Length: 227
Image: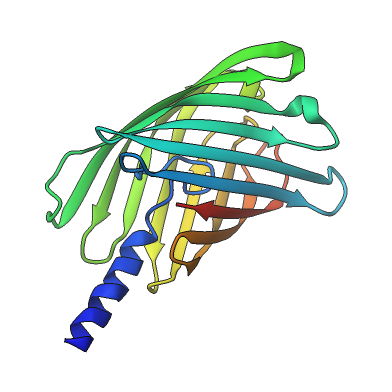
């Protein structure tokens, strides 16, 4: 009986590592269940010159049922340059396409945010549509699709591919990486690790690598997630 409880606990911890609403920047297939919420703080830190920076993004989501959550996100808060920040409000829906016990589980993921930029009170948008598949045996999850947005968040009007991978390694550790194709302000490959240090808390540490000829810079990425 004790061994059975230990196995069940280990399995539940491994599953809960997926309970996050973004990989790093790319949305995941996870959504908050009805009346549940999540909070995530992200810091992008470059402590060396040139282009030293310290950007923060804070996201809050609330589950409303029907595989949908409502999201509010404060992007790109720079205390030295507060007018670079962008406030977004929208939704994400993740519809299961296969039964829960299937060897390969698929979700269709769609979402959108209305954006309001602090600079010149500019209005913008970001929308995406993706497919996400998860292997039940290894918990490997692959996500990919298309997105579109304008200059308020991306620095230029853009559309293209986004994708990510999530791979639990132990009950508390997971490898993850995501990527935006293109030359816009979010055009990065970000690989990193996730550690679940408490029942409802995770910390993620990654490193962003800008795409070739994109305007971005190399920097560390740190996230705290409460779900």
